[in-house]
Picture: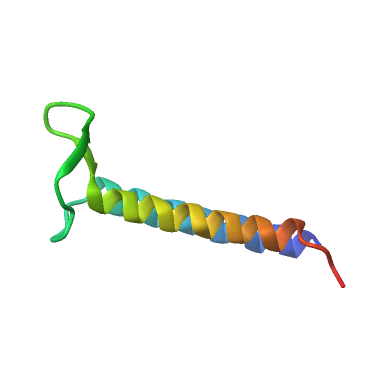
Length: 70
């Protein structure tokens, strides 16, 4: 049980790190700015895709952790 939590926390940390790198970086298909945070930074349409993937990954990890054991 403890290893399951350790593995899930490791995966969650990696998902979060990669999502932060993608959201804060610049890439080819980032799309238009949807929400401007500062004069030089904002939430792009491509960032919504990254954040949706992050949320799906985190929900999947929670499902693994709290799901019933057979």
